[in-house]
Amino acid sequence: MSDRLTSLHEAIEKVLPDLDGVLALKSGPGGIVSPYLFSKEHPEELAKLAIWPKEPVPDTLKIILRAHPDAKLAIVCRGCEERGIVEMFKHAQLGLDNLTLIGLQCEKDEAEFCRCAKPFTVHAKTIVGQPIEGVADPLTEQVSALSQPEKLAFWKQEFEHCIKCYGCRNICPQCFCNICALEDEKWVETGRLPMAKPSMYHLVRAMHMTAKCVACRECEETCPADIPMAVHFRLIARDVKEMFNYETGADMEQKPPQLLVLEEGEYDRTGLPH
Amino acid sequence: MMHEPKIIGFLCNWCSYRGADSAGMARLKYPPNIKIIRVPCSGRISPELVLRTFREGADAVMVLGCHIGDCHYSTGNHRTAKRMPVLKKLLEYTGIESERLYINWVSAAEGEKFATVIKDFTEKISALPPFVETMK
Amino acid sequence: MIKYENVLTTCPYCGTGCALHLQVLDNTLVGVLPAKNHIISNGGLCIKGWNAHAFVNHPDRLNKPLIRKNGKLKEATWDEALKLVADKLGAIKTESGPDSVAFLSSAKCTNEENYLMQKFARAVIGTNNVDHCARL
Image (cartoon, rainbow over all chains, first blue to last red; front, top):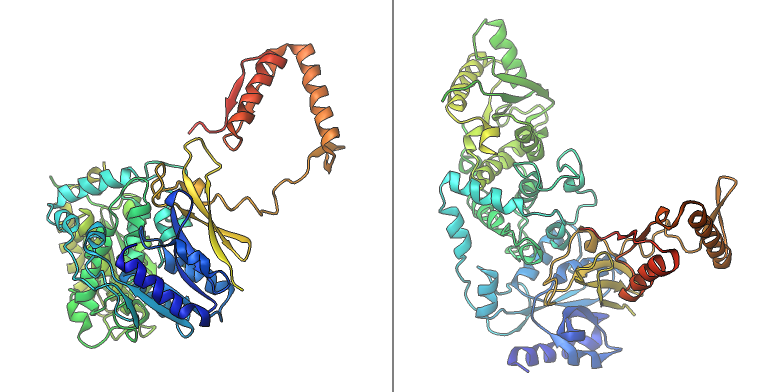
């Protein structure tokens, strides 16, 4: 058992008796990992505690809290998952009062797998593992360095592979609308693959991820066509930082820009004419 | 290669559409490539609408609204000012010329500005290849 | 006590065999998660797999055999329904020959069930008209 797993085990054991449950990952048949709500009634299940591969736990948390809004829970979350929870809180998807965050710090190889700029938690009081610095994102740099026709060719080819499984939307912690624009035939036509160009599905989704994407890369990981859609989201996140000085999951108090009107000086940074 | 571009203009009812009216009343000339759609507020123009306009074969999209601070609904055009620059960036990252999406503010009194804006924009878009060609 | 767990299973829709987790909250099926480190699907699912939980508790799901009597579907016992099918299939075979009957199987059935069906088609009825739903 690795050090991190041992300390995570201890951290959960410590809080488990006082809570309704701790949401973490459990190793199932054939070593397949999935989210599981550990409870004080069955502490023996903790023997199957797992940490990798990461799973969309914020989404699972939302499902549980919708059915049990007053439940006292703890969640084992990585940096990206913590950001996901913070952003869901800002958009009134869940409450944080009864929630304990156990921050699991990613290791170098995990961060590199996710091309993660922030593989550490910032809000969690309990921390497991040593926080490390973010790693570079070679793919995003590579794509953004392409010329305009090259970019067009690159994305046309990538989006051509899309089978419209809606997996990226389903797994996204920030896709929680009851009525989804991507299911509206006005915007995304049905019954045609590959999609008409430009791909409305991906561009509309990229727009909706503005100031919402927490860079967890769950969408890319679940994509059966391996479309690197997070590249779009990351480039836009840089613009959002520049224009609106907003970073997802960083400041618990700061409201997302789409919920606000223009502030003093903000207009100048949008590059629009005066 | 020059061509006759198809430009769709979303004009806000309270300022820009009146601006187009006053350009007409002053008998100002501007290219006929722009097809004007009147909307209650430029904030009504969601990214979905712009993208669908492109998908339907438009070469360029204009969104014209009231100047910041003059919005009939006080902060409607703040939405435009927040989302359209991001959409322009997204088009750029996807390899679509971001010039194809144009945002400006035209008040009811600015008939002359309206005519100039349309003229300059049409010239700029005529120099680009037709959008549907680039999507093939 | 809140109970949340994931049950690992195989997607019922086609023959690929993608693994998925059924999300079970308080003994009720609430959703589907792909299985990440599974050798076949590797964390991916298609739109059918993503909605594989939808039919389980659907109110439109058939629980009992129905027989149309006087234009209306009425609940029937399995004996009644099977007798009706057997009689009619037998009658069609005698009247128009075995090749007037076709068999459509399903990827939702097991290998053994599918084997049985083609055996029934070929050995009992005497036709090679066998096909299945999963022509993906």
